[in-house]
Image 1 (cartoon, rainbow, N blue to C red):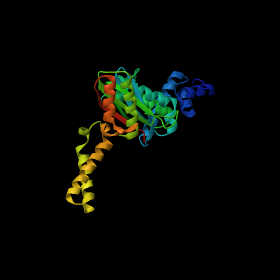
Image 2: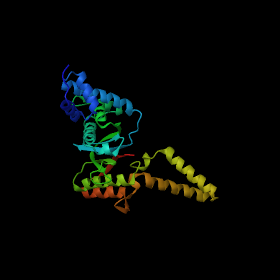
Image 3: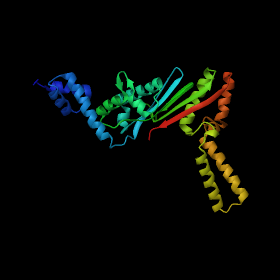
Image 4: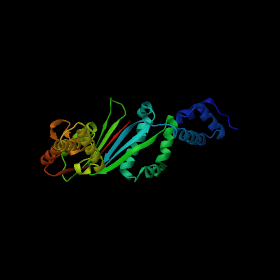
Amino acid sequence: MAEITAADVKKLRELTDAPMMACKKALVDADGDFEKAADLVRERTGAKMDARAAERTASEGAVFGHVADGVGALLQLSCETDFVAKGERFQDLGARLAEHVATTDPADADALLASDIDGQSVQALLSEVQAVTGEKLEVAAFTRRTGSVETYLHTPTPGAPAKVGVLVALDTDVDGEAVEKLKRDLTMHIAAMKPLVVREDEVDGALLDKEREFARKEAEEQGKPAEIIERIVDGKVKKVYTEWVLLNQPFVKDDKQSVAQVVDAAGTSAGGEITVSGFTRLQVG
């Protein structure tokens, strides 16, 4: 049996960030073979961590974005504590995964986890960082859009992990500063105002019917006349559209204009038509 020194254990611990006793046992089992011991540590701590992590909740984390060549991606990576979310390993992993989503366009979460980055599956990468941090990690959500795209990541304080992320995509044949400014303004507006859809025809009809029913029932209980009740219901629908629909919302930087008016003005300035084709807003917690 090879002699296992304290220096060997210390070196393996520094490489893997695994517990001291796990490193010592791996070196013993590997008969002093350092590379084999490192593999054993990753396998063993990862397997144990995966089993424990299934019982815990990953309610912290961060949002990551990537934009290149007309493709944008947004990804929410979750962990258990904000301390881990701030860490370099977690931040590097999130950035790599967001770029990977933009590049590969996985169909769903299972496809993403099974896909490879530099010869390693995304699931293996998650398990590796999970083993090092001691916390459950999971990809909570991701999206990918094409066109004239922009992302915005909002951090509560300088240097903190991004807790809100927005990806917006425009359909337009024009570019220039007016378009770039519009994209920046829209992402920040969406982060602040939390719209659900781009335009009225995208509102869920079932949800709208519930809002109508609630408004009608409330007015009836207050003894309002029938003709007044219908006006109240119509007013409720209009309010819903204003709150839920991006283009109907008052623009956050100038509430005398709607977002639709801001988009039209940017198109006029840029010399072409601009359409908001879609957006995604992700938030930790």
